[in-house]
Image (cartoon, rainbow, N blue to C red):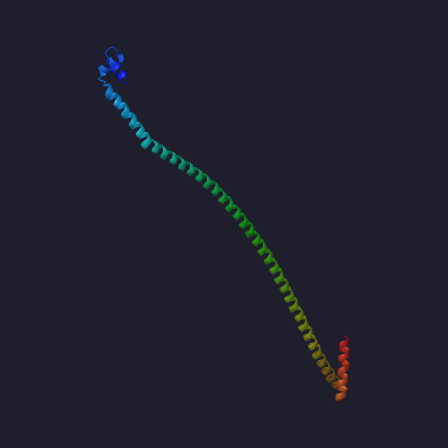
Length: 181
C-alpha cells in the first residue's frame, strides 16, 4: 500500500499531480476513508438496522391492523346479517302472535255471540212462559167472572135464587163450554 501512495506522490504520475494541486494528503485521505467505513459500519449496525427493524415492525403492525379491520368489517357484516335475520324472525313471530290474537278474539266474539243468543232465547222462552201463565190466569178469572155473571143473569131471568149446588153446576157447565171454545 505504501508503494501506491509513494507512486501517487511522485510528480510523474498525473494522479499525483492532480492530488498535489488540490492539496490531498494521501495519509489523511486513507485515514478518512477508514474512518468513513468504520462510521458507515457503525451507523449501519446501530442506526440503519434498528430503523429498518422498527420500520418492518411498523409495516407488520399496519398489515395486522388492516387484517383486523377486514376481520372486523366481515364480523360487522355478519352481525348485521344476523340482526336482520333476528328482526325478520321477530317480525314473523309478532305477525303470528297478532294473527293468533285475532283468531282468539274471533272465537271469543263467536262464543259471546252464542251466549247472547242463548240468553235472548232464554228470555224469550221465559217471557212466553210468563205470558202463557198470565193467559191461563186471566182465562181462569174470566171463567169465574163469566160463571158468576151467568149465575147472576140466570137468577135474574128465572127470578129464583139458585142453591149453591145449582150455582156450582151452572158454573162448571159454563166453564166447560168456554174451555171447548
